[in-house]
View 1 (cartoon, rainbow, N blue to C red):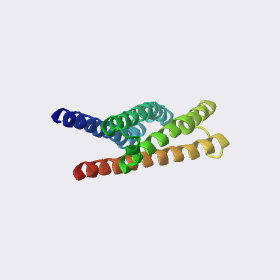
View 2 (cartoon, one colour):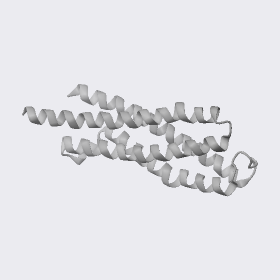
View 3 (tube, rainbow, N blue to C red):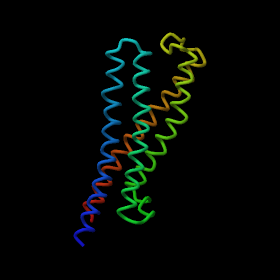
View 4 (tube, rainbow, N blue to C red):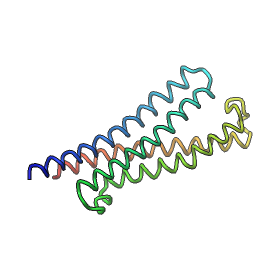
Length: 164
């Protein structure tokens, strides 16, 4: 029985660790890397390239960490029904939003950046710039939603732990 408790604790730790790493990385990118790049690099195109580079890696890491969270939950509970729990649903939504952001929004923004050569020097009224700005707004919305879902998921995960 003690062995089972230790394994359960290990899987629970993996759930907390994977969500914490994702949440911390997302917050760091949003509140430190992105503003810092635009403040210190002096060139908005270079800053955008740096943030885009970091964001793509965050997306892949986030999806990986979300899948690790779900695998640990499944290994701990032996029940796919545990994915319908509120904390797990937050993580599932985080994975889906992140995958959608990377595969559609970020991908399209990269194509537009290549077409424009310089986002900064492309007139605001240029259709490519208008589309880029619309997609950027969508990207920020997705990232904000992922961050809020991560905070909610962590709160719910802690609450779930204190109930058992």
